[in-house]
Image: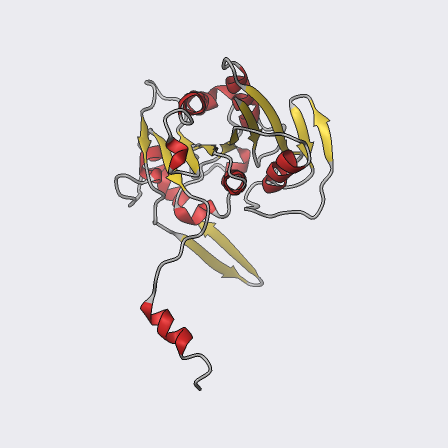
Length: 261
């Protein structure tokens, strides 16, 4: 199996090296890394017109976004992966409103448009209220559950037909606990708690979900990705990439009346 490994934290990030080591140990798996040269967190599916690519000890460093990495790998670097793995991201990617912002998830989505199955993997790192997330740097051991889950899914998901229905899997893992984490199939949470405050000419934008998660005060129902991870389980959400449409009679009538004014 040929695996393309990418991320959005950058090619020097601990998380991608953790997954590279974990997947390279699998028999019959050939891993090629094509990842951003610098941190591209939260860029979503941003795409560049042109990017510079340079060799790296574990693959290729792309001076661009995660989406650039997937397109460059398949279109210009002559890679033909059976599977794309994006991660492991430092920080969870939970809830439907986050999916479009995440560079990690966006790499998996881009792979899906190429018709390549993909797995996006992220690590939920609980952060105390008085510590800035930017100061949190998990070591390699913090990714042990993510490594275990990713290895398992890479070994098994293709063979059992998971990707006959799902285009990609969004996987979120807890930090290791006293016992191995269970894996549960989830759906992205609908809970949304963004806020903004104005201070003169500055507007401070805050995602209050993170504070609620660190205190355990979440309203997400059972079966959602956020509840699973907060409770210490590995969350796996099977998702599809194309936007979907539904029939709306009201819109049909609106379109039919266009030009009647």
